[in-house]
Image 1 (cartoon, rainbow, N blue to C red):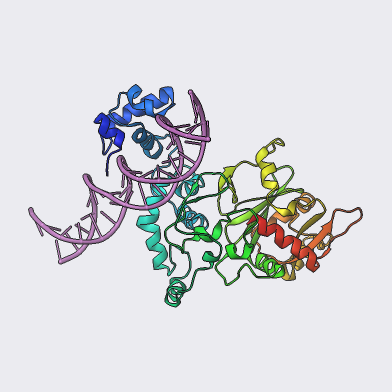
Image 2: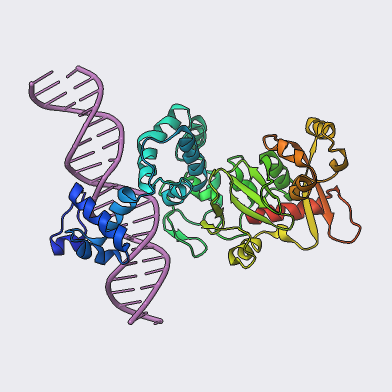
Length: 371
DNA sequence: AAGGCATCCAACCGCATTGCA
DNA sequence: TTGCAATGCGGTTGGATGCCT
């Protein structure tokens, strides 16, 4: 542990904080707030630099911190988020209320990495270790290398916070984050299969379909909000008119814009600029088309059994409409339906019909821009 | 009991970004 | 536009602790 240059200049204390120092800092911030951190030590009567005070507050003294061991659910969530976000500890921490990035980083390095290895999973790539070894043996480039310009320099995305490209080119970061909102093909980011940028749009669509995990509906919201989750941790949150991308593996209500990597809010605020920004990202907000999934096979039979027959030709993805009319929709929260694409134009008297190739193309393009 | 080693985790460092004059 | 200070973030360090021999 070194010392900040400012600490050298001012002969400030370093190392562990004493209870007295904690008390001084806590009292000061409780009473006055932190304001400008560089002025906090002086005002609080501490021989520390502002940076040190800030860190102590964020990682230890904040009243909203959750103490104690991580639960199994929290560990699972961290693993899932790491697969999507890589070493972006602050963004992972944002999904776990009461936990700090430092805490999560330490847990990952001391415990979770080990657990994943024991399960035969490479903690850097989240691929099976055998596959990673095979790739290394063959000197094969990871699927990510096709999608990134460089792994040797830092880069930023969308004007948001710093995005550090990891030294290890196997990092999931490379494959999860497009450098522009439309430059990457969905499939290359959805998992680690051999899909590449050359695949046809209908293949992309099939890929989407395969990675669809579940639909759920929030009957307490008005209008009812439908949520659609995909295997890569992203999802779509919809009402009847729009689809907003977010990180679906989170149990919290924080919505993450996967393009800008920053939390945004989606609420009932019609003037919310973030909403507009998000809606402009995906081509699925096309004015002339609506689209969705319809359950087939066993699930379709179950729907009929529950009086859903009148809706059997209506897509589930536009679930807000269905859920408004048919409360049993919520029973499908945990079902992964077999799905077939349906599409409807917004022209008068248009009805739902099975998608044609051109519809699939539009759909795949829309998803390709979101993910 | 003592020494060596491994692990944990609080705290620091360096760098990028942001905000402001 | 530029320079600088403040802030935020991820990587790293090293003291404390526990376990093993």
